[in-house]
Image (cartoon, rainbow, N blue to C red; front, side):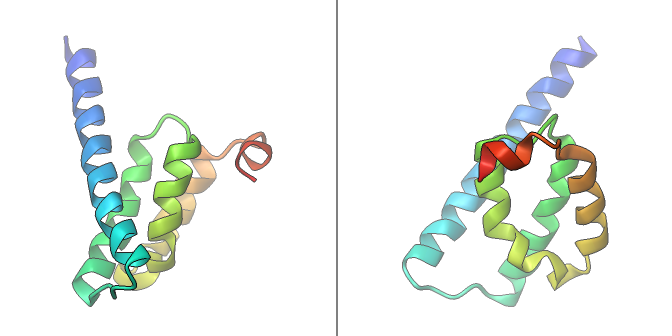
Length: 96
């Protein structure tokens, strides 16, 4: 039961993450700027990497939007650690 609940929570977090990134992607596409508060939110959202089992193509595109803001809330060290744990050697081939 607990495993099912964890998976449900994980899916909800990923759905939330996707909604956020769609919002910021639309802002980017429309030439709208990102406020300091938005940059901090994007920076903090990168901490969600830890809930991923692996980084698939969709995750890659979500991360690509937020990575430029990694340092905005001093998260870069933790983000690099999380990415190092999640990226497999085959990921380079699949996502290029």
